[in-house]
Image 1: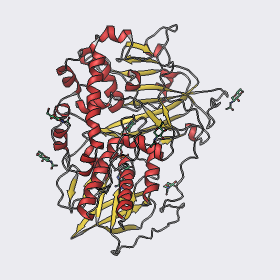
Image 2 (image 1 turned 180 degrees about the vertical axis):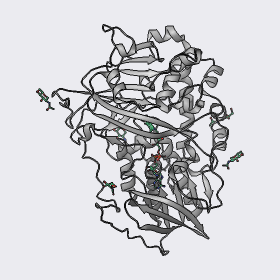
Image 3 (image 1 turned 60 degrees about the vertical axis):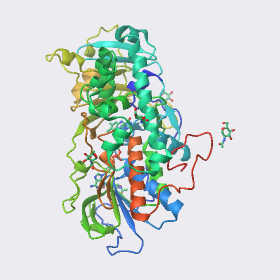
Length: 538
Ligand SMILES: Cc1cc2nc3c(=O)[nH]c(=O)nc-3n(C[C@H](O)[C@H](O)[C@H](O)COP(=O)(O)OP(=O)(O)OC[C@H]3O[C@@H](n4cnc5c(N)ncnc54)[C@H](O)[C@@H]3O)c2cc1C
Ligand SMILES: *[C@@H]1O[C@H](CO)[C@@H](O)[C@H](O)[C@H]1NC(C)=O
Ligand SMILES: *[C@@H]1O[C@H](CO)[C@@H](O)[C@H](O)[C@H]1NC(C)=O
Ligand SMILES: *[C@@H]1O[C@H](CO)[C@@H](O)[C@H](O)[C@H]1NC(C)=O
Ligand SMILES: *[C@@H]1O[C@H](CO)[C@@H](O)[C@H](O)[C@H]1NC(C)=O
Ligand SMILES: *[C@@H]1O[C@H](CO)[C@@H](O)[C@H](O)[C@H]1NC(C)=O
């Protein structure tokens, strides 16, 4: 385990060497629009004999929900039709890539979720089953600095876990105790993949937290929890802070400790070459669902024993209306703008999300400008810069860091893995990713990096604001109506969304179809070489 990997968990810093696939295409998608011309969707409104399930959202949660339903259909010979809707024109939701200069001849960069780890058994298995290539995060020669708004409090290169500087600054046990805590959390998480928890779906996340012994961790801030475990306070206030800030845009003394520990789990940090969205794309393809992209679900109404869903394809005035036996909401409810008012559903508590600015840019300069960071020209400046709010905590007048993280991604490469000559003078450029709470203007970028080329900005409602909590949203809103993203205020990652989706599908299958994702007589891993994963191995 390398601590720099840990801290860099959301960076797509990987130098991708191999060639990869074509840009995103969806020949199998049903819905599409031509300019101005309306292509009506052939959606019958009358009840058909075949029961239908609707899934709202085609991110990690919705795409995997479709996949898990597909597994149940396969194993039980169920005749169920699945319609999958997404307002976006692509599959992947918060997991998507862009090409530098919007040029499909250049290797894409992750714009949202970048990294998953070996303990993420669903995503890991998916890459293997779907023949996708992972690239490991390589520590390389990167120098990492921890910026407090005025100065670098520590700068290291190579493995942080072993760095003498770290031991000197934070004491000998900070790292080993943190590792032990994170490892025990990972061990607890592995319960979620077992036959037992898989076949007995949970309906209440508060209860789940109790079963997994995580009530303390979700009920305290990361700082409180780590302090209580006797971990060096300065370490938590600086280094753990850096991890929660880069991964969740929140300080260690604000975010609950379960999510804080997730920020630190990075053994085998990887990403899919060409984009993580390919996992979700494959989930959907293998599910045989009907896919309606560019289509926003407007309302879900309950009529006796079925739901009526209304949706609209962008640019079309035609309103789709269709009835379903069950509906899975696989998007954060408050940003989905779905009208559920006519359902007597238990209230989904309001859930704010962290509004994050992601800025991607290219620059011919191999590192940020020394003077911007108050260094001398002869000093070297880190190419990965993490941040801490510790200076502000100590002195409220201190300037807070203007960004959450800056990371050099390596050179902009062609699909063949060669440095591309993208600079205006025909030279090579580096790509840089910045996370910040505010928009960073071009003038700021020029002060920080000197010459800049391509700039791409994206604002995300990235992850829930995650203060310590003792209650979580309901998973089952009504008979046949389920909410996957109830899980996000507990843990918000791609992997946990696939687990939450599996749990919801298991509930739905048991409750509505007297079926399951797995056959009860079909147990045990298919081969000895892989860890048993419920749903894959049954
Ligand atoms: C910048 C960034 C970095 C991140 N880094 C990581 C990381 O390194 N590793 C990691 O595991 N996680 C990371 N995350 C978190 C991760 O992206 C999310 O936890 C996960 O992708 C959520 O998946 P989801 O399917 O639940 O939601 P989403 O991906 O948000 O999918 C929901 C979908 O629902 C659609 N939708 C919403 N409303 C409607 C409607 N009314 N009708 C139709 N469709 C609708 C949306 O268009 C969207 O596509 C990161 C997130 C961000 C933003
Ligand atoms: C979605 O809409 C956009 C903008 O109108 C369009 O460019 C894209 O092709 C559409 N995608 C699909 C899959 O329909
Ligand atoms: C939770 O703690 C209890 C009591 O300490 C223990 O018996 C149980 O095995 C633990 N559960 C998990 C999932 O670790
Ligand atoms: C970039 O330019 C150099 C020097 O002109 C050239 O040798 C190299 O092949 C170019 N790279 C690509 C990917 O075209
Ligand atoms: C979950 O269980 C807890 C404890 O029993 C209860 O207080 C809470 O209301 C339940 N939550 C939901 C969403 O049902
Ligand atoms: C397990 O791995 C070994 C060595 O890598 C290999 O020879 C064997 O065929 C594998 N077994 C299965 C069932 O995949």
